[in-house]
Amino acid sequence: MINLGKILQYQSFNYLKFLIIFFSFISFFTSAQKQYPLDSLNLRETNALFADDYGDFYLYKNTDLSFAKYDSTDLQLSKIMFTVPFKVQSVENPLNIFAFSENAQEMRLYDENLVEIQRINLRQDFGSIVMAYGADLQYFWLLEDSTKRLIKYRFRDKNIQNSYLMNFGFEDIRYMIVYRNLIYILKEKEFAVYDLQSNLIFKKEIVNGKKLHRENNDFFIIEDKKIGKYNSAGIFAEVFKNQNAKIVDKNSNNFLAIVKNKLYIYRIENK
Image 1 (cartoon, rainbow, N blue to C red):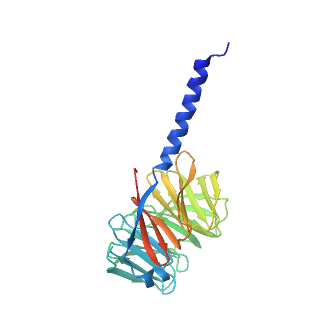
Image 2 (image 1 turned 180 degrees about the vertical axis):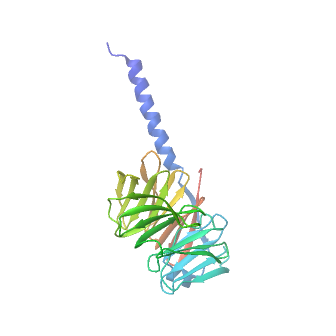
Image 3 (image 1 turned 180 degrees about the horizontal axis):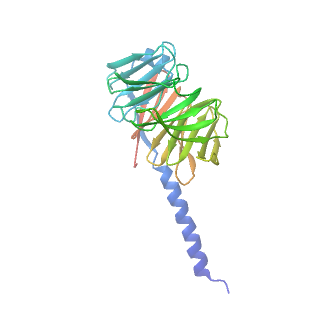
């Protein structure tokens, strides 16, 4: 005889599971947009946008290789003029901003005023480094193309702590995060997660990947016009999209979009 009670209990459990997953993403619905008065000329020439959690914005331009910090009233607070292209890692902690140059084979560390704190020349100890990730004020994670290794490097005393042979392609890597023994790799058309033995954990096709952003155990995959979220349960979902945007980004409390040379902020509700 069919046990109707057990069937209903099973269906209720699956429905509850669905709701938990659904509401873990629906929390990223946003409130009405707010426009910020940043100079339209600066925004038109901007190639990368960053926002910290203290109300300041950072613009990187390929035209003059500049990286500038502004407050919410469009007052320029500080500025760097690079001589070769650099990839700014993150402004999540504006007291310590890492920037890597594949051309110069250098990692640099800047403070909240964009004053250079330290410069690390990677040519002296390694072959060609295609990507570097500053984990903290002690360690870098490096991808060395010549040996196909992922290297954990204690830069304070120039000591290699560990190295791991990787079997994925090193070409066109745009961003990397190493966190809790997993490697998060962003390419132009692919987001992938590997373990330290180079086993593929997850892969997702994307469109024009720009950078990665981590908040606790959640990873945000930032493309031209949309942002996806990958969580520790292995679930990937789109959390923000603006088809008219030139650039989108995210900090802890907001999504951001440059649309028609104007910066719009979308507050994340019910986070």
